[in-house]
Image (tube, rainbow, N blue to C red; front, side, top):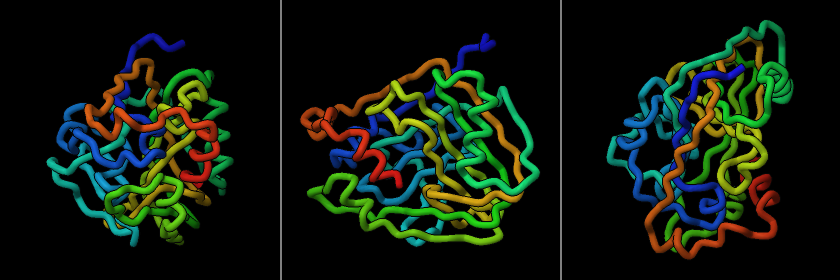
Length: 238
């Protein structure tokens, strides 16, 4: 039984990102005032964003991570103050699909938002990052078609992600959306797949959603209800 309320803050919607709205009015500093845990991207898709333990990292398409400045622009992000209500250990070899299925079994409901942190050791970790885009921006499925995929082996790191209910399609990525920062804090990316050796899973339930929409001409005229929305999300995330 969930008794306490907990807020997840979101900047813009995934449908706007799909339509090429890559400039926003939110900054890294604004995100850090709202949470210490989250994921997103930077202006022009200039790197994958990971907010972990109150530090924001940018991971570029070569897989390298650097600390992002507070004045960096952010067109899309989901953040929260991570306060786990559920945790458990994984002690045997698991694929990513097996890990997410195990989490689903323990949640009790698919109707809430969940922030998920996994500190683990990985036999294999496959990630991607998108190359920075120039105006006029292309739709996200075209930008991600040229993504660079990197595979790390025998590494440890922290997966930062969210599990979003299906009814939020168009707002966020339905299901699991995650980025990873390796323990050296110098590499990572958007998680495509992994094989975990062992790890600790922590889950923070979100009952409230604070959604901030950009006050920009690009957002105002964006097509946020395409007929193939789910297909575009699947193509962009895979």
